[in-house]
Length: 163
Image: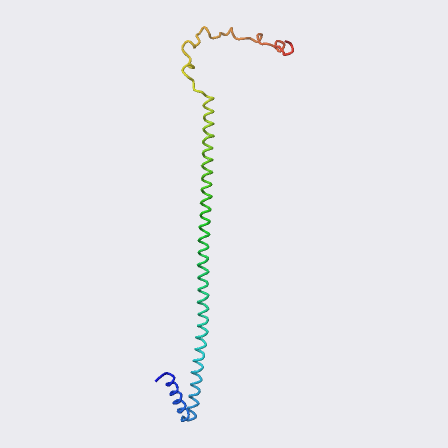
């Protein structure tokens, strides 16, 4: 027997039962059927509402997850770009510091070489020998020291105009 034939047969049996049942039982059955129908209707409506809400929540969840993934990709790409830029800047700074260090070393070298030129080390010919040491005869005595009378006055000094 197919489903539709079974439904028709069940429907006919239900009609005959309803026709032959007494009135008080019919009222109780009607009340029970109404309650069951209300429950089924409410359950059906609730299922539809919950199903609709669940579908919308699932859809919103999917959209949110897609947006989250997109934002994560954007953040990672921006972070990579920023990292590359920072590395480039650091390399430039490193090169500039290297150049500054070289310039400082050159300057320091020039300064130290100019000091060496001024101080010049004495050679063998510059060292005094025994003959260059003064003897006691060459040292001035107290009588050789000039007195105040030997000091020139302002009138003794020749001026440019007196020549």
